Image (cartoon, rainbow, N blue to C red; front, side):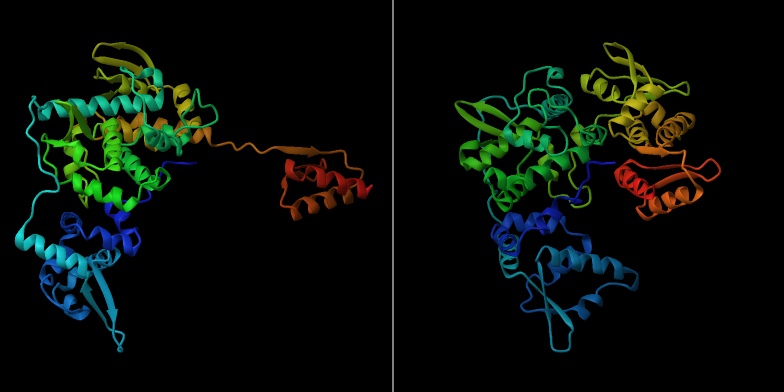
Length: 452
């Protein structure tokens, strides 16, 4: 069953996948070097800092002596990550013993940055109008994100008109929307599954696809990654002059604003960038992309009688619940529905799995029920899995039935022929009946004519 898969686990995996020349060009920027250093595992950071001012290669055996016996696995992970990012250049001597030296560009720029400091990538500008508060940014980000997902479900569901850029539409059309009918695109199986992902996974999928197809837009992936890393140094809630950006960077900002990741605000005929919190976490290694401001607390309560109550005013929440449940009525702050066999069958046909539905209900459980284990009644989760298994219990294969054979020998010859073509599905030797796959029907017919 096709699913939306996350190929790169985090942002730094995409950095590591860049060609060597582009990686070296990234390291020309001291702030990029700092962002890369932040992303490293703790042991890898230790290695870089300890040999930062050391000229020449360092023996691999020496590095191994810096860790305890139980840290061998972490040591290997750290070395592998440093080599992937070309921070470490591996050198092998005549005795086939490995040594490691720092990337010269990375080393020189990081030395200057840590020793002398430096100016920020872009200075903040003095805004002449009131800038939004952190609460306003959170509200803005949530509204933009919900509107974005509602457009994925149906353009008519958006509360305010929003036109997506061609860059965002290409992301939608890469596995999330069918392209058969441009006037009325429909969700694919991957699109239905995407809607049930947690917010972190959804945003990372979009960012990854946005970078992956950047060359189609005439943008170098290395330049785009460099700019996204640069955004991580901007201060939340501060204003930045968009006129200091290149045209490609301005287009990127406009695309990110559609997702609610940054906000564009007009300040005396000058546009200003107001960074939302997500950019500060763009380089985070362990949590990949942390968009915590989008993660509202749970709102779903599921009862043992399969009744579903969602304490939410969001139209997006209602549309997502409609993917696998029957919505009965909606009050201003309450959505009431039921998980039925028919609603689940419709979800399964769209490519949504029982595990995804159960995971969604657990992740979005209301705080009152999230405290108990399990947060979703076991009889409900068991029944959801049983209904999926019941739907997949029978596999339909197009076939043809042959009977009334003139003799036993002809019947057995037909069975042998079907086995040779791997097309025999069933045989009854007493009544001389055989069922074969439809794909070998023409061959079987010609064979039986030859037998006559």
